[in-house]
Amino acid sequence: MPKITYVDSQGNSKTIEVENGLTVMEGAIQNDIPGIDADCGGSMACATCHVYVEEKWFNKLPKAEDAEIDMIDMAVEPKKNSRLSCQLIVSDELEGLKVTTPEKQS
Amino acid sequence: MIKTDVVIIGAGPVGLFAVHQLGIKGLKAVVVDNLDKVGGQCIELYPDKPIYDIPAVPECTGKDLTDKLLEQIKPFKTTFFLNERVEEVKEEGNNWIVKTNNNNQFNAPNILIAGGVGSFEPRKLTTKGAEKFENKSIFYSVKNKDDFKNKNISIFGGGDSALDWALELSKFSKITLVHRRNEFRGAPHTLNEIKKLEEQKKISIKTPCQLDKIEGEDKIKSISIKYEDGKIENITTDFILSFFGLVMKLGPIAEWGLNMDKKTISVNPKNFETNKKGIFAAGDICSYPGKLKLILSGFHEVALASVECFKRARPNEKYRFEFTTSSKTIQDRLGKK
Image (cartoon, rainbow over all chains, first blue to last red; front, side, top):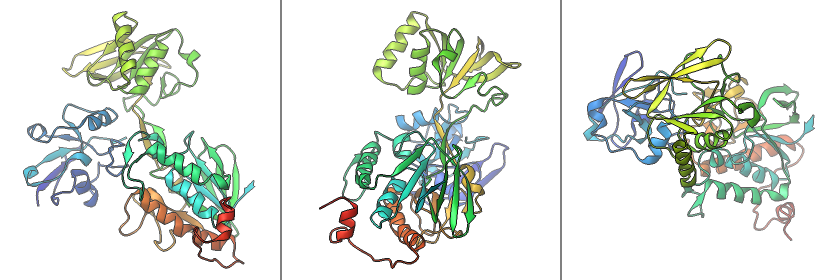
């Protein structure tokens, strides 16, 4: 199972194994990783699973759809490397992915 | 004080179908919702997006689904209390007293919470000092246009609300529209209008940038915005209007003494009762082993909850399971001959 690293806004990091096919958001929720709320449950309707993706990974990920980009507009402090973790599907290619959660989700 | 059999909290699809399931059993319900219209997330978040997993409805939008449900529950002549939030729930004998923030009071043996993920509230700015200026210089909606006349207004956001208000208020105020990226998302007609006004120097557009600082004592005097490249610009501002969509807050529900699991309410999957007798939860807000946050699961949940509601509302009557296809009583209740 690919290892995903979640770093909080204070710099504390946790690395967990997430099953292929789950989203980076689900990996966090199922393993009680704080900093990801995911209020809408993954329907791209709330922007509370917002994460910053490490630069070198950002360009490797499949590009965000328009609907995701629109939703990121609503997130707290979006940056160039912002993504919604509910749209990042875990696969072997993501082994070692590192995401940082923002200080607040709403 | 309004007496009823069930107080339903939440007018989303699950709350609406609860009216039906209770109605065919002869129970009266009232529905309370914080939003100004029925439909919940279906209307607020995805009125035009298709839904493909409603049984026997291959495709419909959030709005279609809401309209159909309203049609289905029409025979029950239900009263909706919209723009109202339930603040307090108190036990009185076998019944519950429910109070709203609009001073309505209900007395009922049952409460059914179909509150989704809580009530919708505008997403607030998190910039330092933003809270202090709220409702004085910072607004998340426009209640009275006249308050925004002859002012310097900085509008934040890139969607329809931001664009529409930029257009409207530019008729009598100086507008700066700030967005984090260069593309705006709005109706083509609106985008064209905005472009025209920018050329006429009636609206000033700042992208890609975000709010950096708010300056002022009692009222805002100016703000600074930060561009992606780090450049800072100061803008004279009387009012900020911010349109970053809605967030969902559980609100007072968290304080009613119900067993919670994170932001959801734990229920018994047999009848969807919470740890309090006569308080039920269904739809996205409830949790039990294997719970799926699907509309169709919510429909099932209210069907089962309505049976227990019947037993509590009519303790002296025997509950009889009936089919709508064959029950004369149900057909009468539905106004069918």
